[in-house]
Every structure is written in C-alpha cells, then in structure tokens.
Length: 115
Image 1 (cartoon, rainbow, N blue to C red):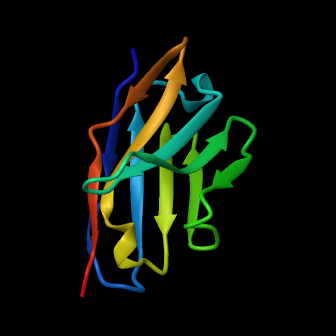
Image 2: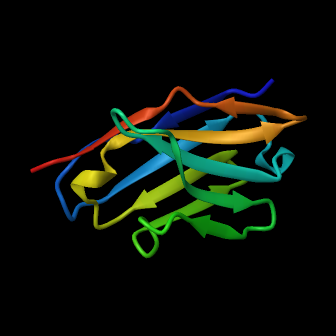
C-alpha cells in the first residue's frame, strides 16, 4: 500500500508560479517512476511530467520549459514547479506511482490560473 498526498495548489495569475508537493508514505526509492498528471474539466487525464529513480525527467510538450519536477528523498516528496502559468494549465493535478504492479494516485490538488 502507498498513500500519496498532494498539496500546493491554488489560484495563480497568468504568468505566475506555483509549486506542488506530493508526499509519499514510503521511500520514493521504492518507485521506478513517479509522475504528475492533470485533468481539466471535460478532458481526459494527461501525463504532465515524470521522473525515474535515476533522476531522468520527461515532460509533455505543453509544459516543456515551464514546469520542472524533482524529488527529495529525505522527505519522500515529489515536487512540480510550475512557472509561466497559463489559463490552460487549470486542472486538478495528481501524482502517481506504480508499486508492485499497482498504480496509486493521490487525491489531487486544484490549480486555477486566472486573472
């Protein structure tokens, strides 16, 4: 079993920044890959960013150069730094891991980008 808890969402203005956190209930070295997904109203959930146990990162084209994901192993926490936010970044953001063949999701955190 793995519990994931996201935090850090909220309201940001276009061009602003937010940092999301995802705390895990076990060592993040338990996971080969950790990911951030988002789901906007009426749209499918999409992968935003991922990071492997080796530290390799990948990003959706829509967020490349604006978002950065990182980990803190001492805190068992995954982060998503979001800069230059756009209204189209508005969504519920979820972190995700796969552990022993099962996918686990956090409860999500709302990000709203609006002036």
